[in-house]
Amino acid sequence: MPTTPRRVTQRDIARLAGVSQATVSLVLNNRADTDVRIAPETRDRVLRAIAETGYAADPVARRLASRFNRIIGVFTYEPAFPSGSRDFFHPFLLGIEEYAERAGCDLLLFTSAPVIDGRRRIFHQDNRLRLADGCILLGREIDAAELHRLNRDGFPYVAVGRRDDAGGPVPYVGADYTTAVSELVGLALARGHRRLAYLNMGTTAESSEDRRRGFVAATTAADNARHLTTVDRDAEAILDDLLADRTTVAFVEDFATAVELELATRRRGLTVPGDLSILTLGDPTVPVPTDLTFTGFRIPREEMGRQSVEVLTGVIDGSADGVQQRLLPCELVEGDTLGAP
Image (cartoon, rainbow, N blue to C red):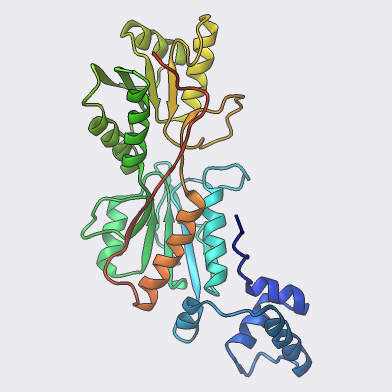
């Protein structure tokens, strides 16, 4: 199958012309700032690179060019901004960076917000939110009171992940966990499973609620579908509970818990999926070593990041048609951990 050519970016033009990306942006926007001087030969090199590559400025960048700072804020509610290459947030940031470059925008990371009760707060005494044209919010749980204030103040923002209304609808780009979990239940039922257990982390975040909703909606054909909370319980105790109830397949919210449960099963001389099938409801949030490919689904995190910037630029420049709320499909993974009961 032929592949789609990669889109030429301002970064590519800058590399070919031997200049900075900022210089390319100035040439493209025909800026003539009195404090910025571009030598004619430099401008010619940039224009030649543009002609040779067939570069076309993204229409979003053109809309934003004359009216805004073209600075997009990124705020995470976790205590420290993630930096590990395998961190759960890393793919989101890759997607955000990619589309921000297409739109000719710089990213501003809001890292100075104080941590109160283990969570960063957007609004505080030295709040710098207005330095950006708008902001993307990242976090497993986002403070509803702060969403309410953002809606009230009319500041452009987009949440990554589905969010409940907060003084009005919340613009977001999320993953369709409900459908993904329902499809996994369908796979298990098709293999003959009728005693299913859902292992939740005990959180009230929308992402967890969506997963549980998918499980409940799809288990009407099961003889016994139950929910177990894994908070403060080790894998051995969880396994005891599953075996006592004659559970044949466990749907596990937390990837690390799934790995621990598989190891506990093997320590008992049992097998996965022979004695217990284990399905994971998303990617690991931290690196978890395992040789198994778990049956489950992958979250479209990079695409969520890209589309969050796309939605935000529409909010900023006024081209969005109402409040945008997008749910992207997850990718099912048929791995090694789902068998017949």
